[in-house]
Length: 327
Image 1 (spheres, rainbow, N blue to C red):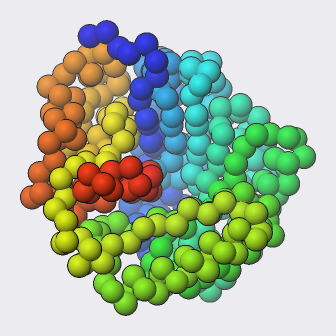
Image 2 (tube, rainbow, N blue to C red):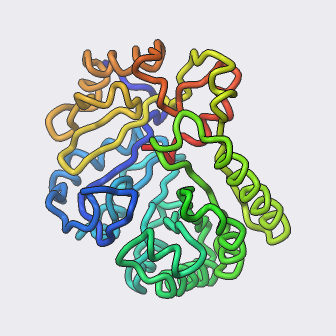
């Protein structure tokens, strides 16, 4: 099958499967050493060439990318193969932002954004959620990253990624102030999936909306970009029938064994293909890829009703903006 001329894939990439923290929302995968790492020779020969077809990518999804033993080589190989228009980002818990790692990220030339998972604006809240991390240490390292980025003139956005939970949403305004103090450019929020899907209890919705509005006003005054999360009440959700899928097309998670898993949660298993075993054109021409595309084009309430991507036709555009935080 002939692939599109322009890059079309959106990849969320875990080349390793470990993390050095035990966050309360991450379950059994948290706080484990790498058990699987995609070997560098396979990345060089099978994965890196695929980047000529990648429109955007994020290093890190379920695991900590700064634990990858060949991070610098991986970024260099992406730079060799990527299309000039490809946009890249990396998401990290920030605990491993040493001077050497900061230099690697800023020098790579392939990242337009570095995202820091920051789920609290005080040590007590942050450390109760991101167990094993030290709030003051992470803040110091993020500040160093921002200062170095500015000193070198690198066109890289530094962003806080805040997962909204009952334990932390009241600190959103404080997080905006912390971002401004450290030199962080933007704060984006995401709902805790699947707990707050497809709608939120009315009391929580009112409280979290108020916190986000106060954060929005602070962000305007402090020059910090802010992306709030949209919540639906149960009444709002049931008022209109869901009929469309707002998932980003051709978005996949690549795991350390080379498997591509579709963004569509209903089509998540089996994987769509494996880049260590098949060429990309073979995967795109496969029945599994056709089934994934069919799932996006024909969403089914029984499979999709708890997914954020399952929306009304009117919601399709706005709700699609939140897709990246829910993989």
